[in-house]
Image (cartoon, rainbow, N blue to C red):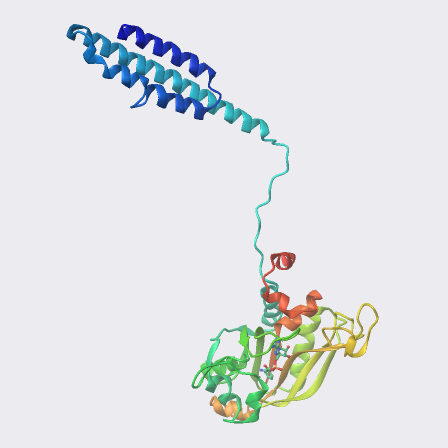
Length: 351
Ligand code: FA5
């Protein structure tokens, strides 16, 4: 058969086959078989030398024209497949469906509680200050009247970093830093932040948060401390909260107190929901109806001496456990939930 006739046949066969393809992928494979570099059209063109020399230019031209035409047909078919796919996805799109809310982050409950507490104390005139979590032995213990090798250092299981360097075990070193910086009274600061101890159970975690408060001025007494703490706790928990001041001991305060709050989980009853009391009762207050939330006292003259303040100065300090307060505020009976980072838990505290 003449080459030119074979070219026509190929074009007709291609058009027929193209009409029958069911997908873009089938159309592409047809392009390969018929029009590709090793396809049927290329094979025909390779036979050009069979023709007499004078017929070759006309055949070459015709073959190129066929190639172009068939490629155009194929592109049209591919465009039709694309349009069909778009239509199909549009018909699946239902504009009346409710939108999908993007997930929103939220502040951690401990952050929320710290912000609220600091807000109340800022309103009373306390300024917020921040300090390092890796502390010197001097700031964490020495200046706070913990003598070297004094058993009082065992009160807090310390994580040591190096000789003379510790993870701060409380925010009280900020008392020392604030007084060293201010050089003389008045000082009225609060210092929120992380502290570290070797502790782990329902109400103790190895990293937790405290807020330190320090007021040094003229004629400050324990009555001012009681007034400030009572105001703060009533603002935070409501007017019916009950407080209990217990005598205690801290090397850096004299006299010292520990403040307990009526347990809001069991409403001070010490009993669980099923009525069990005593040691088997409320998990948070261990059946006592009270939960210790802070330590406090009048600044010890030895601390004033260590920072170069006149030991006759007067001031009070307190250190509050933020997680304990947050547990009571939100009715959470296991402090470890704050640190498990379960989004189902954290998502409940969106402001
Ligand atoms: C102190 O840390 C003193 N610096 C507080 C202080 C400051 C006293 C200023 C006097 C003047 P204490 O070790 O009791 O004291 O801790 C204070 C509060 O932190 C406790 O009442 C408790 O609420 C909380 N707390 C203590 N240990 C943990 C822990 N492992 N996990 C969570 N909260 C804790």
